[in-house]
Length: 442
Ligand SMILES: [Fe+2]
Image 1 (cartoon, protein in one colour):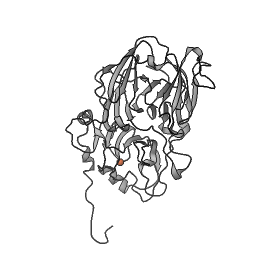
Image 2: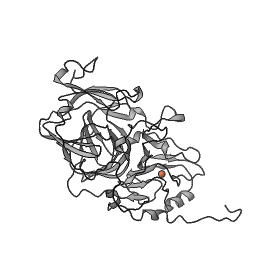
Image 3: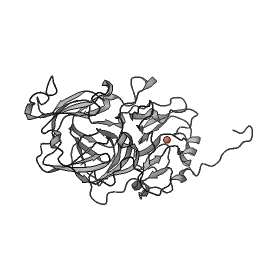
Image 4: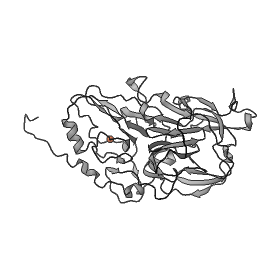
């Protein structure tokens, strides 16, 4: 278990070309691949985009490490993580179509680490063509010590909800607490441990099979607000010099494998490049919203977007609902009723979400799939329809959404999860007919 969260160093910026070394002179200057690297290090390139990707989307880093990665994967054995599903995954379950909501995952019955504690709720798209995503929830109560993991199938956006975590990646260490997120690039080795005291560590993960998350264009908003690049933090180089038995676990096209090695694979002493992990504090998000009447679509709260080749049609939007002032005049202020071609998986980090008066609890989840109607519950509708419209600070709240252009397929685990609320639909039961067609009635 890690102790401190304050001593780590980070470099600010989104998509920058960074350089960092944990020993002086470990990073070659003026070239990437010298005949001999200092300290007896090996040089290795890690490419997150095809070599020939346009400059704006070309991502690679150069790692200077104790051993090259070919020494970190020996012969693989098959492994099984039956609760981590990968699209296409048409799980066999009997739950009919519907709007769904869950209370938080129950605490683990047996001690488990982050990797063992991941539970897939939905999958979308197809990992074999590198489109789509999976929404996972996790609980764990043990550190990954000699176990390491990399996911060849996509990057992982981790959203802690309960308990801070330490993510030790090949390119450095990130301490991430609730209200922060972190991103672990596709293919990057890492392990996760707990920070602080507690019984269980809980959160959400979005696995992105498609193009990398990037910052959304701001359009007429201009050069500032929403998620600002300087608030993204990339760790400085850090390494483990450990010569003891270790296991590297891999997910590759939905299947799991494990390989045994005699040392830590987190042995990168220095690196430079723009293919990096990062963390981001959701409290630094600068929301833009309605200042007179009505309100924009929730896309106005997009933190990160994973684009597709079709402009404006995201593989995934990561959207938050942060604290903000509500000032709109003669306006129904909560999210309106709607149906959507995109599919929405939501979670609540803390507080209360403004469209629901009750039932959506921190650590819980909801799924409003393609074209299924949703919106405020009956209590919320009445309150918002009749309240005095003075400026109100919506405070102490942070909900988020993984929204994808693809329908989200429910896993059997999610369909049969004991915390599934069988009365969720009743939240709209009180929305009675109010219509009176008598001419002149208002
Ligand atoms: Fe929605």
